[in-house]
Image 1 (cartoon, one colour):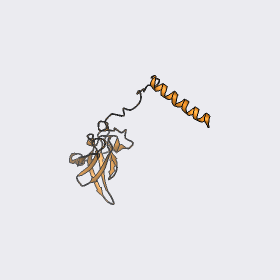
Image 2 (cartoon, helix red, strand yellow; image 1 turned 60 degrees about the vertical axis):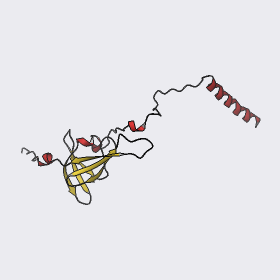
Image 3 (cartoon, rainbow, N blue to C red; image 1 turned 45 degrees about the horizontal axis):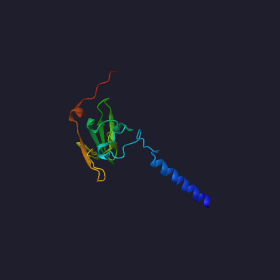
Length: 144
């Protein structure tokens, strides 16, 4: 029992002397700043789905379908391709979600960049309006 006590005190003495003599230095390289305000850090996701690979404002609503659940057809800017979106789907590069789908718009909500740490997270609503120009385009004729 006496050897354990001596071992414990020897380690405590070693730790104290290393702190008092400057034997330990903190190296912040490669570590996150623990004092950076979280509100200034807006996550940018590298989208795993096609809906997450574009900013929300880049989408155009070209059609809706109402069956068991509302479904929207969104057009991406480049390359031009259609993507199906449903309520609850993740959308955009900043963690947004599809909140509602109506005949003429899709309502999305994403965390606001102005949220203050320690308080309730604020959200920004972004509306994707129906694109009459895009929906009115006649289909391209295919050569036989």
